[in-house]
Amino acid sequence: MFPKDIITTYLTEVKKMKPAKIEELKANAETSEKRLELSLIEDGVVKEKELYAYLSKEMDVPLVDLTEKEIPRDTLLIVPQPLAETHYIIAFEKTKDTIYLAMIDPLDIQTIEFMRRKTGLIPAVSLATPSSIKRALRFYRAGLEEELKLAGVTSKQTKNYKPEELKKAAEELPIINIVKSILEHAIFQDASDIHIEPTEKDVSVRYRVDGMLHSVMHLPTQVRNGITARIKILANLKIDEHMLPQDGRFKIEVNEEELAFRVSIIPVYDGEKIVMRVLHEGQKPLTLDQLGFLPGPRKLVDAAIQRPHGMVLVTGPTGSGKTTTLYSVLGILNQPNVNISTIEDPIEYHVGGINQSQINPRVGFSFASGLRAFLRQDPDIIMVGEIRDQETAEIAMHAAMTGHLVLSTLHTNDAPTTLPRLMDMGIPPFLIAFTANIIIAQRLVRRLCDHCRTPFKLDAPAVKELQKLVDVRTAIKLFTEHDIKLKTAEKKLSAMEFFRSPGCRKCDQSGYKGRIGIYEILEVDAGVAELINNRGTATQIKEYAIKNGMITMLEDGLIKAKQGMTSIEEVLRVTRE
Image (cartoon, rainbow, N blue to C red; front, side):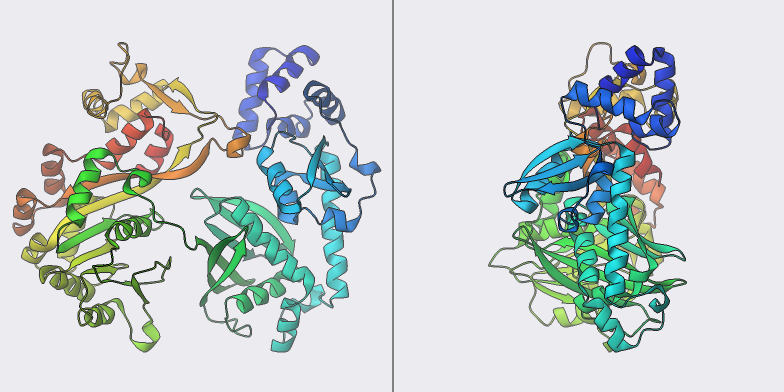
């Protein structure tokens, strides 16, 4: 995105606007989630040609009019369509050493660098107006439709393919290129999931980046069945099965990195919806520090996983990073002198030195039956992907009681709630009290972008909301204990400095880049064990734990917000869920 001061200068000096009006226009753009310059053009506040002529002059970047260019199709296709549509970038000319790129944001270094790596050519960047970029983007659709006709795929063929026709459609070059572009761009965007969703009018493609879903592109319905068939072939699924859900997996190599895609396909009203989880094969497990554990909680986890037996439970909702935490713990424990076995649904990452099994309900291989089999395999450490029922819980706890370290996950909102939840599943209190070593509850918050992070003070509504959740004396005590130096004036929440990121080209204007965990660690000591045996409530357990030094998830997030790792808004968003 252009530096806002350039556009502000234009509005002030050329359009003679007052600061209050400019702030109003910026707020409108932010509310509508649009780039400031696009919002100004669409609302008729400025003329596109005049604004871009000014920007070209101020930034010393040549302005190119794509409507006057005849772009060769092979040059146009150098930029993958998803990238062109998302980042408004067009390749309009190519020489032996140079690729000429038209962009509405010539400061998007990440995209320019991607094109340099992809093509091996030197990028020469020009500025182009949004309207001329949009006009050029039509060439993709026109060209795609042309190629589809040549391949024999028409809009009338979007339903009831015969198996041999589906296979043929999946092997056509346009379909292969579309799927390849979707996958490559997802990796480029650091997406964790790809959603391909058929609608009545088109096919929607969305990526989940840092936990948030973003619309990427819309494809014509003509390619819907071809894309589905192509992905089914890659994942070794039945291409003629359209009425039942299917799960599969495939691998590709991009920039010398091997990536796996876990595929889930389900029938929906307008066809079949595909969701692909992006898994970085061979990626080393993160350390507890990298995950975001504070020093005190990290010591508790280190002590718990070094014990020869007992249970370590990680809890939280779907998508809160529980499996990543367990893999990190396994990375610490994975030594040649121990036998580690896991039973998962599904296997997220392949880890050398660990025996990994995936459940298969169709043949009766469940978490419970797998656990029973593991106990005959002389294990030292067992990881159970998830405790879903009483039978699995009981077997896991008996394993923990008989000399094994058992790691698993459970769906609860916080750490203290986990213990009554196990009792509700029918597990005897004495068994829980004897086997549970530690409970780790967690959420994921987005990291603030380091490049545009700035300090600020909370406004009155935010202070009021935060005061309902945390006492200022508690906050000051937490900050002091974690070596956060406070200024003399920071004796009230309203006077404390936190951080936020307005957005820049490094974070794609989102203000965030990556994620980090916030945690709540409940150590099952003698006091907690006594409460369990007396069938204490989650509230009683929580009160005892806090009194004895447990840092809640909100407090953990507050510390990280004060350290500049995340924002107060993020912490409140995930802890309110």
